[in-house]
Length: 263
Image 1: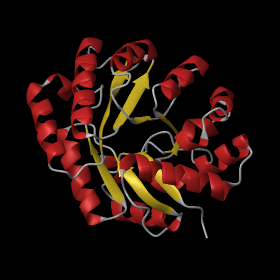
Image 2: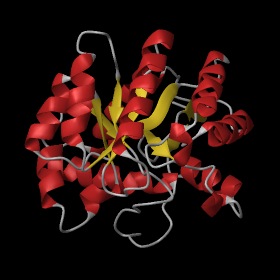
Image 3: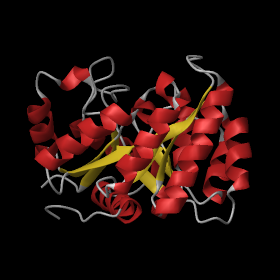
Image 4: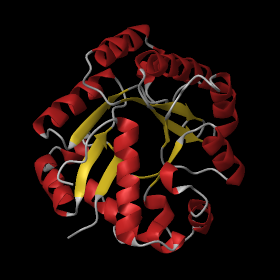
């Protein structure tokens, strides 16, 4: 029997999966992935992941949000549409939202205003938030510090920060999502930080179709590959694979509010 796994961050509505989406889900199930969080990047993709989740009930769990690199974040109609989507009750989280100073596709001021608006939506609806941060931890700290003590919960996905950033994320009460990067040989720094994440705050992810883990690096990523992330983290942390996988899966179920199908 494969270990109990949850992919807490994948973009299965992306065109990369148009040719074989159902086969991707089947392979994930065969690999022991009993649930996946299907992440949106704008209002249109939120509708797409909700439709996909409906095709795979109890396995797919959709989010609704506007990614910081999407031009839609500066459109007030998109934010209104996002609020309406969240009011439908179909979504398990707000996001993916956050700050990104790497891609430079959208002004940081627009990103910050959209992030603050989406944090407000999450707090108003008592939903977790899926956060993205790339080369922008100082700005993220400023925004999250405003919400200290407000009950904000969620995950900083694809963590790429340093020890100080990890300390801040944990102090903010957030979970830490780790994916394919921890399997890359040059990222010994991330593997070392992975040892410091408390078991109850650790989540596994793929960020599919990007950042495929070793031994699939350079290929299209998919949820089944989260098993390789679990294997590396279990080795790095000196834990049994089955125990680490189950702990991370139950963390995901508690945070996003779903049952572990088939478990």
